[in-house]
Image (cartoon, rainbow, N blue to C red; front, side, top):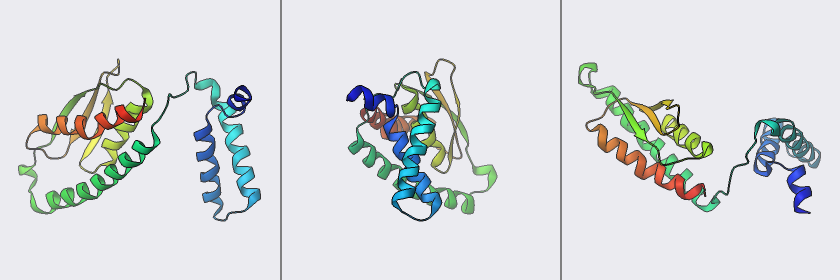
Length: 166
């Protein structure tokens, strides 16, 4: 049974996500739309499975939810901070910086979530990943201490992502 399930659903969470997105795009819920969304999710994941040689490992969903809440809070706070910086600081007083963040994360999914989190947070942008995947280059709009910003990203985001992606 497990083998048949894995064959039919090579990426079950992606199948579910695609089905939910399909229903949301249709702007109405019906059993037929839900069934078609699941079928669409199965077909898309089966058709693209060749480009996914390794399936992601386990993900701790409870910690992922708390991580999402932290990121949402940080986005709200960063929006206020960036607005304050833009409204009160002249360009000459800004201290932009490029920060290299050494990564302890090894899975591409975790690194992608970290880079996306950094880019989603106003005032910071993930610009590049090293060829070996050992460091991330981040641009910060304004910083007093680049080292403390690097340490905060590692502690606030990367540490939690290591717990989420088992």
